[in-house]
Length: 187
Picture 1 (spheres, rainbow, N blue to C red):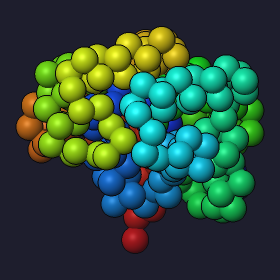
Picture 2: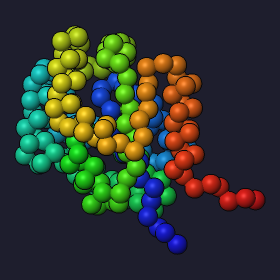
Picture 3: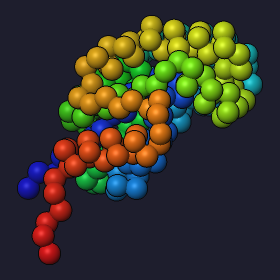
Picture 4: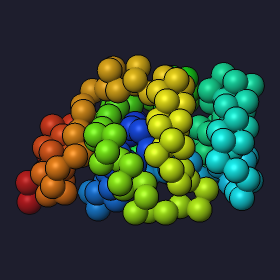
């Protein structure tokens, strides 16, 4: 019997729909971990937006891009008995490589949406430490892609567009899940 869990990595730019994918994966029995979870411990909230990006960039540089996944690995390993794991928010190939090395080869799902759609969502979310202006949002987008997000999206096993209706997005994800998860045994 194969005890290797099914591992999904979800990658996408800010406000592309990664959180929605995480919620839907949880409904389908996945234990989901957000790579952004350790951020408040690593880069304190309340500092100006650009300074937060600069500090996080330095941490990424110092660790070869694995600071966030390494901070989560202990928590993820505690759930390895789960058959289905999802890691949300990869932005660097080094993160995917670390997941592959420590947990096994993941299936990578890339999520994308238009810049205008993502900016509108970002403003609606109004996160206190998030980008508040279009210039900040463009800076964040450039930063995410400079980390290597485009490389992950280009190499993803599946791509989900999230610029339209939510129901279309959910149906697209369900099709992917039907393709990658084993069928349930007949009763």
